[in-house]
Length: 386
Ligand SMILES: Nc1nc2c(ncn2[C@@H]2O[C@H](COP(=O)(O)OP(=O)(O)OP(=O)(O)O)[C@@H](O)[C@H]2O)c(=O)[nH]1
Ligand SMILES: [Mg+2]
Image (cartoon, rainbow, N blue to C red; front, top):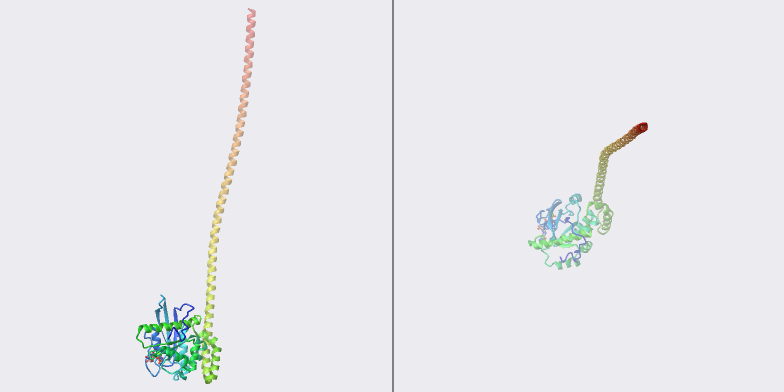
C-alpha cells in the first residue's frame, strides 16, 4: 500500500515511537483477525483457521518484542477478539467481551485494527459491524482505528485495488476511510516471504505510530467513556435517523457506558482511599520525623549543654587560677614590701649603730687628743722646770 495509507499521508511522526503499544483487532468472524495478529507478533499465538463458526471464542492477549531497527526494542501487545458484532453473538456477550478486552489493555488501546477481507464485498453487515463498534466504544474510537484488509495475496494490483477502494467502494466505506484519515493497510497473512512479512509488519506499525502521535500519545481507555457519553448518544441519535436502529440498542450502548461510569466512580473512590491512606502514612511519617528530629534536638541540646558546662568549668578554672595568681602576686608584693621595710629598718639600725660607733670613736679620739695635749703640756712644763 504505497508509502503509507491511501494517500501516503501518515508517514510523519512528530513524536518518538512508544516502547510499548497495545493493539486490538476487531471485525466480523473469519475476516482474518487472528491470522493478522499472528503476523504482527511473528508467532502462531492465536488459532487461525477456515471455519463457518467463530474460531476465536473469547478475547485473548499475546505480546512480542522487536528491535525497531534504530537500536531500541519495542513491545507490541495484541488483543485478538472473536467476531463481536455478528448476528450470532448476543449484545450481552459482546458487552462482556468488550469489557474483557478493555480490562486486558491495561494502559489503554493505542490502535484498533478493524479487520475486513479484501475479497469480500463491503456489505450492510460490515457497515453494521462498524456502527456497533462506534456505538459500543463511542465516536472517539475513530481516532484510533486502522482499517486492515486481509487476503492481500488475492489482490493482484495493489494500486488498482486502492483506486477501487477510494472511488468504487460504498459511500459508507469511503466516508469511513476519510474519517480514519486514510489509515488503510493491506495484509497478506499467507505469505511465506519473510521480507514481505517484515515489510507489512513495519508498515502496520508505522500506521499505529501515526495513530498514536495523532492522539498525542494518548491511548483509548475506558476513562474516556464519561467524555464520550454525550458524543456516543449524539452519534447514536444521528445513526438512528439514518439507519433506524431499534431503541434497545441505545439502552445497550448506554448500559456499557454506565458500567464504565460506575467502574470509574469505584476507581476514583479507591484512588481517594489510597490518597487518604497515603496522606495518613505521610502524616505519621512526618510525626515520626518530628519525634526523631525532637530526639535529635534534645540530644543536640544535651551535647551543647555539656559543652557549655565544660567550657564554663574551664573558664571558672581559668578565673580561679587567675585569682590565685593575683593573690599570689599580692602576697609576693606584700612580702617584697615587708622585706623592703625590714631592710630599711635594718639599714637604719645599722646606720644608727655606725653613727654611734663613729660618735664613740670621735669621743675616744677627742679624749686621746686631750690626753695627748695633757702629756705635751706636762712634758713641756717638766722641761721648763729642769
Ligand atoms: N488467503 C488468505 N487467507 C487468509 C488471510 N488471512 C486469513 N486468512 C484465512 O482466513 C481464515 C480465517 O482466519 P482467522 O484468522 O481464523 O480469522 P478470524 O477473523 O480470527 O476468525 P474468528 O476468530 O473465527 O472470528 C483462515 O483460514 C485463514 O487462513 C489472508 O491474508 N489471505
Ligand atoms: Mg480469530
